[in-house]
Length: 356
Ligand SMILES: [Fe+2]
View 1 (spheres, rainbow, N blue to C red):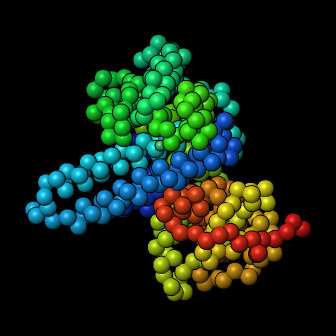
View 2: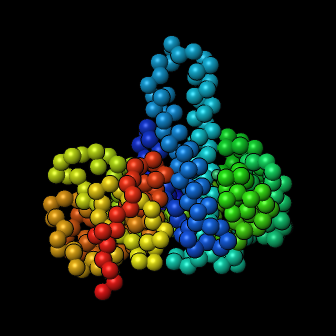
């Protein structure tokens, strides 16, 4: 196994030296254990997405800078903001990846660290319970303030450490975060008001230890062991059957024969969760796919999206590709599209099929 491979390599295909690509939500925001969809999606789209958009804007500004002629105060400001935005992007990705259930199932609140990580926590803290007591106390001590509670692997100290971070740019040098708990008010206020302590307990009941364990194995050089852990459940496994939000944005700027056809698929039960759609998309019920599949143009790419890019778009893309269409699923769905600042129009359900 290639130990240098990042756990999310299959989803970083849209990254370029100049642009950092959005990561999809791996948790199902409507099925979390005591954390609302409204809170999680707002956090993902506005705070994580906001940091990502800021980072890319700063990097574009830096790329165009005349280093010899730019005053020091301007360089200072941009480099400071770049570090803060990059730290925010990375810590938010670790935070969201660390939450969620198994496959299609919601978190139970009873998940435990996998064997290798459990042994390391016992070695370094005495027991998993002792680690948990320290980590949650450290997070709760940030109530009323802000920052991050982080579990990290320190190569120099040869152990896992719980460390506090005052802001997105604060960390233990050389240590690799394994788990990050967001203690900024935006992470809990919508659901918990000022009760940060209740939020910490609820977040701990939503941990996805499989992914945290994969990050630990990567940090100690054992490889992550399975990219599928870092793909939204039900998304197509083949890279050519997926399209990132950034790639779609570029493709939609084409006003020619290669401009993708947009299909918005939504389960009937999920319609109340929807407010908007991509301009030019037509909305359909996934179960009605056999009724209109043959009407799709064969010569143009087809992009299928759903709310978060799980199995609704994944299943349809598999079906379309089996029938010979050049279909791709939007990674992260319309939620990722929102997070990169993609524009939308009000929801139009006039093409949506009634149940047969
Ligand atoms: Fe946050």
